Length: 444
Image (cartoon, rainbow, N blue to C red; front, top):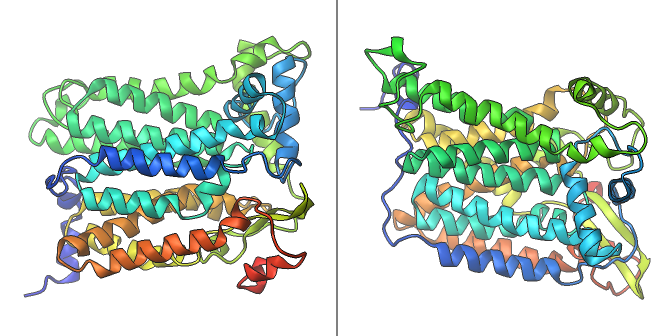
């Protein structure tokens, strides 16, 4: 007999209180396969990394800012935090002020973030199938690959977020204080890369408080100080505030350290907090229309990508198109709905959490009213979209329906191979080669 809708809704608190147990491990940790996928991704990212040798898209803002950091002369591009620019500057110092040096830090961060995201999926689900499906779909979703090959700030933000969720999954799975602390460090560093992930930062702390509340049924007066309960036994809620609240802030502010040594207008401790308000004001002041600006609903349906580059350069016609995988970016949408249903109807907390994280990543752009937005702002939400798709396909796989998962991986990989020249600035046969890849008029 099917449960009535109201009876399901009435059980939501009970369902949310269940731990992240997930399916039991059947074939062991796919660590070697995770490393192999990340290594293959790195090889593809490094191929032609210095091409085009010309500055492309927003590198025009961040390369001069990185050079100012190296010289410690004065502020440039002050509307964004410093971590991403510090990474670019480090690449310049070690490998030279050249296209390879500019872009290598994000290539390494993108690979690290891919590996961390797979490890987060493993420890959250203990599903080998979900982990490997996620890794393959994530590596070929186009967005992560393109952002790993350009000297922008988004990869510093997104890769640190992936590391934070890896440590959070370990903390919940192993009951580890130190993984909880590392989660806090990486959350703060993610914010130090860019503010895009800000709506997600509070979620690990809120989840800890929620789990502790339900674990202390009957003795909730001790909510703040009790240590003998989940999700991390031995850690009180007050201590969790330190690791997931104070430590992220300290890590974030630490990324501003070079600004204290500028020769012109150096940052001061007294000015550190007011400076955050000034950064927000500068970001909100960007109102001039841009050819490639778009809105959140266009990202969801993969309607309005960005041409990072398209010109004859380095001896050939070349282009870099920032677009999502035409199949998986749409296939992930019904998967999100299935995950939502599983979360509410069956109490599957992991699938429900993926939906919450997707919405939290997107809602920032849907409601903030900032007029100039771009498709690459969807990169973080696309990670959770691929996670939802992988979880649904893995569930079917474990039920014996393997063809949807196999077909999805094959189609995703084939599209990645087909689009690879336009994702990686490959040599194109003629001036109008963009027509071979712009399947929709809105992609031009």
